[in-house]
Image 1 (cartoon, helix red, strand yellow):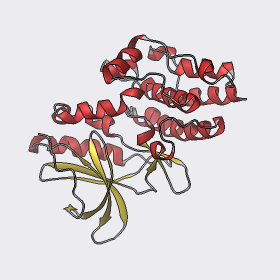
Image 2 (spheres, rainbow, N blue to C red; image 1 turned 90 degrees about the vertical axis):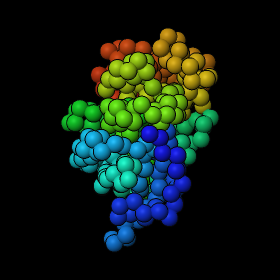
Image 3 (tube, rainbow, N blue to C red; image 1 turned 30 degrees about the horizontal axis):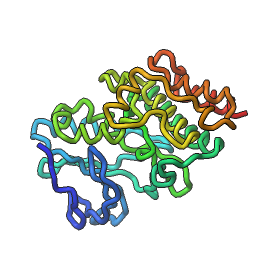
Length: 278
């Protein structure tokens, strides 16, 4: 069942009071919160679905897996609970400015800035891919958060564990979340077969967008899906002639339609990108 009550400012969930609405995502509403006794500031992701009793344990097991992630470029999960059937997770609180807020659509970034951002994300992905066999599934500028030192912190693992949660998958929430992130989804993920290389594909889309000022594919959601599945991206050099040709080759390899045709890892993609910049 979908929960339409999206503005919960001032309410209490578990041991936390919701202070301010930070963002509204397809899967969840994100609040700045405060622990009632410790008084520390946290971020609460309140999911827009009501779970049945039988789904509680599965949700908490999966969140427990996320709470074990310990990496400087991953937003730490502190707590989780289900109250009144409503699931929420509690996360560490950085500045919570996303890369989408820092760099609005149409912004073009310097190569040095892009490589710095991608190094942080690739480091986090290497950790979750290699040590925990997880796929993030939701890499885009809105899920990358800047900490107080302007380092990138990977957040929003919603797709990683809710994608297997059948109760939420049956709700309207899934459609909203997909529309939000569809511009960054790899072909195999759109087809329901996500791969670790799907996260690399999303990095390739962001790199293209930051270099050219627009994503490789655009239009209505169904049009974007068709382009992801069947059409090559437009030449980057036509849109930004000052770019080194080797740079386009690297980005296009990360955007290959088949996962096996991409780099062996997101880390390898960033290394090749850095080399092409030189």
